Length: 147
Ligand code: SF4
Image (cartoon, rainbow, N blue to C red; front, side, top):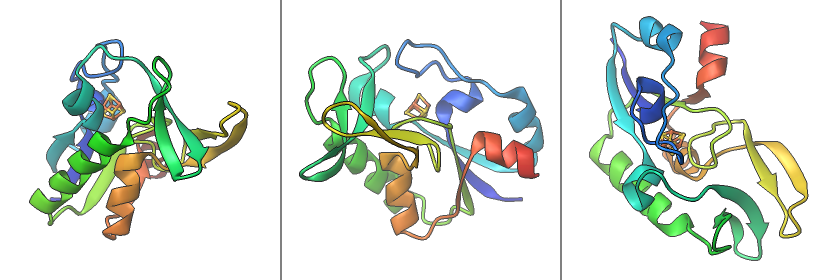
């Protein structure tokens, strides 16, 4: 039995930007023997529904920029991530929602400040904190494909 940190929207929590979910029955079936620890930094920080955000390469590095206000909204996501990983130090694996600017593992889009696409293989801000701590991370679609 593994302890798996997982994007809450994959479990069926209605915490996406439009207050919908990404429930993935196939994934949940594969994880039914494991202990699942849900996280959603964006719902915690901004509630649901909320404006969307994108990862942008800025002078300060890679930031989450609100598509509505154009403000840098990275800080509460990073604070949430650090609190989460401080509290859960025994995680065996993190499964993130593909393409999310917070939870994507190797699938988030990165733009420059002119909104030109630089990469489709970036990690979201929550996942970056996990990787700094040596937590193994995988996108949900990749997990299903491999296992
Ligand atoms: S991808 Fe991450 S931040 Fe977005 S709704 Fe799912 S858990 Fe929340």
